[in-house]
Length: 175
Image (tube, rainbow, N blue to C red):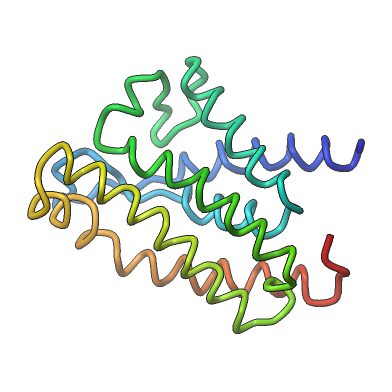
């Protein structure tokens, strides 16, 4: 239990730090930056046993909602959930929970499955974000704001997350 709590705290710190790695793109008119947040969510979701990864992301979202500046570019508050990033934030929780369930099935221990898990987690995050952006702005703007500027970085994060998770889990017994 103590190990899980330590991992939870480390995951929270990792999520908050990676969210601060931020690149603002001119194409992202909605104000949604490219961050290390989604990579952190993918890694936390696959590296921590279910449901601890999802729990870490839920706690991260709650702390950010309550005002701690842990979101991208030091953002915080419940208003973050109603703006352009709201769907992506919800997608983080769904992706982390799903990745934890895939880890239970040993997906992190095999490179192909680890890459596929990261691809699926990314699809959940992007899909959730696009649905919310479409609600706010319509589908054309949702793709313009939430997909086109981000897909090249998403590919890099899938590959990076897949390789990192696999290298850390390949010799471990899945918990």
